Image: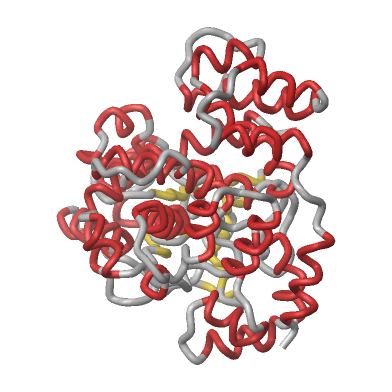
Amino acid sequence: MHLTVTVGDMKTGAAGDHIVTHALGSCLGLVVYDPVLKIGGLLHAMLPLSSINPEKAQANPAMFVDTGVPLLFRTLYEQGALKSRLQVKAAGCGAPMGRNEVFKIGERNYTVLKKLLWKNNILLAAEDVGGNHSRTLHFDLETGEVVVAGNGGRRPL
Amino acid sequence: MRLDEILRSVDTLPAMGGAALQVLALIEDSRASASQIEAALRQDPGITGNLLRLANSAYFGIPARIGSVRQAVSLLGLRRVTQMVVAACAAAVLQRPVEGYDLPAGELWRHSLAVSVAAEGLVGEIGIGAGEEIFTAALLHDVGKVVLGRFVREELARIEAALARGLTFEQAETAALGVDHASVGAELLSRWAIPADIVFAVRWHHDPDRAPASHPMLDVVHVANVLCRMIGIGLGREGLQTEPSISVSRRLGVGTGHLERVASRTLQWANDLAQALAA
């Protein structure tokens, strides 16, 4: 099945599924895959911390990194995924040009992700973060292959 | 440079409907009434239908079902209704796919609505006055892309070369075409008899530091536009190749927390409004 993840959304699937998310700017795109069960999920989180809008986080935890990332891992564990096997890849977290500190939401998204992963002893297998171009992520649940498209090219992550 | 050709093509774009122009004239008229708006809209049932669909979207928060222009005016006020008439008219232009910028059908419209909602959100969040027509200024800020898109596509190689030198996308437009989408949009709107402060905000929305004067409406549209692109609404080919002004964020006193709170609310409102007019 072909699944599309919108901003502030998360979807999981299994072999045969293809998950895509478009227009990653400052948002975090996170892919988690268990290669033995061939199950995985993709999160497109907009903002770092749910404390900025707890009501929204309640209704839609995938909008925030600190609620969306645990939700993605929990959902996969419930389906039998094992932490020791998980391949975790991150993309996005871009920023506009210049030195305006106020607009560093992408960097904050990345920092919160790294803290969460570090606390849980999880390493990123690959990342394509920062910069100022838009990214699209393609995730093939049969092979676990992730492709980043953007800036006029496509490359495996 | 293709400036002449581009400016000539501004003239070939269909103007906003007669109803919109009549209603816009009423914005400035303090004695305007619901019945005058109704009369102006009577000639255009399509616009009336769109106006009522927008008025009933969750963003405006009216629990009752609004069934007539008169009812919309009494529940939302004359100013809100005139803004929605402009939106209903602009939708026809902004919902089209925009070549060059790689914006599929509906995406520029969704971006425009998102910037309107984010701009009003920022005004409330920071607690500043930015002019009552901020919604319309934000809604129309990118209208120049509709005209410039074809030229951007034709000159893409020169634009890409300019981007590779580290220019912002709008600077690259000027380098390749002699004009950017903000100037083209302002030119278009001044021909549609849009109020001057709105045209001013559109003209300088990417370059507030070079504007002949500072204006809170311009500052807020500038920030709201960058914010909506960051959260992925209307990114297209440009991505985040734009530079938010440091003097503007200082002038507004806006911080990352303000931006994040506004962002957390913007997406849903923008989608609600965009869906109200979706075919």
